[in-house]
Image (cartoon, rainbow, N blue to C red):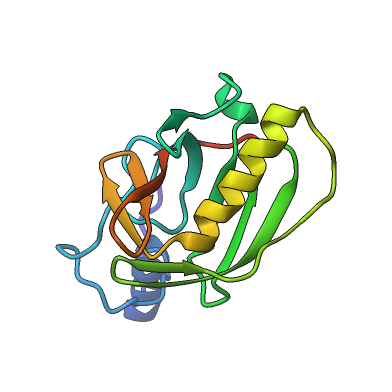
Length: 160
């Protein structure tokens, strides 16, 4: 093995590459939070929220992959995307602390069973009436202006 003397410039370049060349986000290691995952959501945004209860009743259908869901884009675009259980939907949102308001939602126009169409309408109305949000573990609760629960969701990966 040949051992060559490396210049300080080459050494510094290798150190920068070894550190990942990442931009400094201004956060120190003790303030960095773990990435949001279905088992450890750390934020209302950036997580897929699947409906579990609506108006005090269990969501239909029983299969998680077919239930209504939404995701709040964490970027400055403030977009919400999701599915009503029958139709795709999207719109905008505003989130400040626990205060959450959804803008007008648009959706596709497919038809489903009367039960699923009724749930779709109630789901969209719950989004429309939302004033605050509570995050507890993997559960997200949308509440109206009187703090009454409108809908409950579970953090789950949605297969799109």
